[in-house]
Image (tube, rainbow, N blue to C red; front, side, top):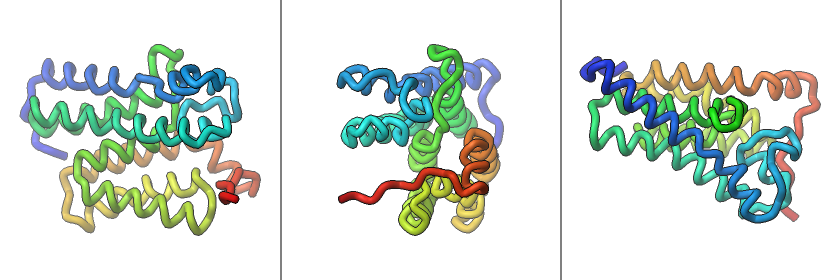
Length: 202
């Protein structure tokens, strides 16, 4: 953890800014704008890129993925310009929570994987690259997006230690725990062998 340097007021302000950035429901906005319906009524009902892909529109899914990641990155970048490092990490965490629990959608949001990767990339880019690489390798081998997300999150604290980034270990561990909680249903389906695989392109 970084040394606490900011006042409670400053920390509260950046927590609010990060949270509000995270609450922007790009999956909902993009699918509506493209006339694809309400993504919350499709597939799993999740607002993230994986469920947007179930509309059959890969462009919409890619845009959702990038913009959800950008929310986390933007929270970190803004805080880094205007606030000490303790507020930076808090803003990133708050953006993740905003995505998972957006007030505008009755606190029913996404699972946070893209936002997690975006904020980690912005916070410590080598750690972010390691997390993205972990996701890509596990997804390619297993063809399970959820397993790839779980492994990327689970190994993030390990990569942080390996890369000498001790100041973000606690944040990485907390984010990993939250992602595992958000993926509880996926974990049950993985154990039961009923989890949907990533479809191969034809």
